[in-house]
Length: 51
Image (cartoon, rainbow, N blue to C red; front, side, top):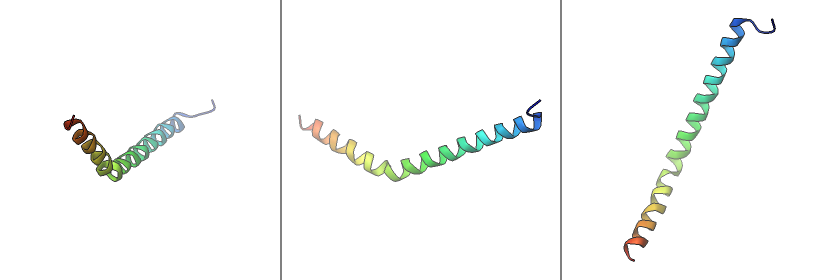
């Protein structure tokens, strides 16, 4: 066998850590860009209200 069951479990943990890292990056990006995105939608809403 190339991999023992112990190594398979280690791979699963590594995938979970990568998933957590990606989630943290996405949350940070949304926190940084959130106000800007909100301002854009607010402008769009104001423009459409004037029609």
